[in-house]
Length: 247
Image (cartoon, rainbow, N blue to C red; front, side, top):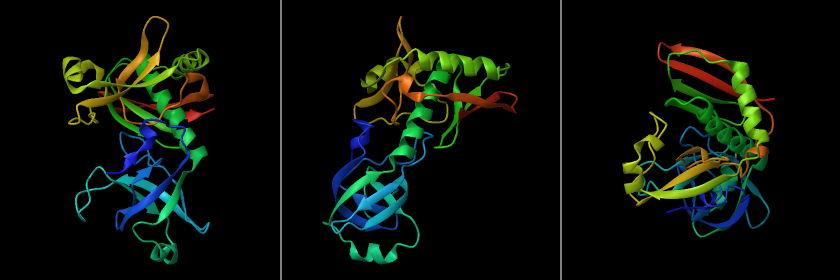
């Protein structure tokens, strides 16, 4: 099982690690700072730095699927094309440093936290989500109109409010007793371990947003900086899409 260090500390940029396996699903490490694609958030990119200083460029990170004798809790680091010679030199047991592409990751963190602010501003269930380094979007299950300028102003106000963003956890039983905490219709939080990771954005009179989430986030809304609503689309009779971009 890959130890997912990013869940405890999204600001950890690198870690020493040991290669567990090299498969068609990527390089498997015993521990990593790389977030795998999931929950609408893109997988991390970066590099594995070898003992001799060479670097295997990682283009994407994915959760391992069934097959090849690997547990689905493992994380595959997918090398960019053209590195076959380097990969042939690697073997299980080798020591590397897993180093995430920080600027790209930080953009993902800023966008992901902004989508939670958007859930506060638009109190409807979400039926689709995509968070990339260049834009983010949420699809809301609703029929009424949305105002692009009003949402942009609302985001700016919440960013300027410098609200702390806290990582926590609740039990499976607590989540079962409070199903309204799940705001996504398309992505359900993982269960089975007895604990569900949560993100809470702290407000003056209570949480601005509180929901299960496994993604990476900034520690304070002030760190988001300038984010604007670039587009609002009517995707169907019951879906309104809000697209975010950096100002």
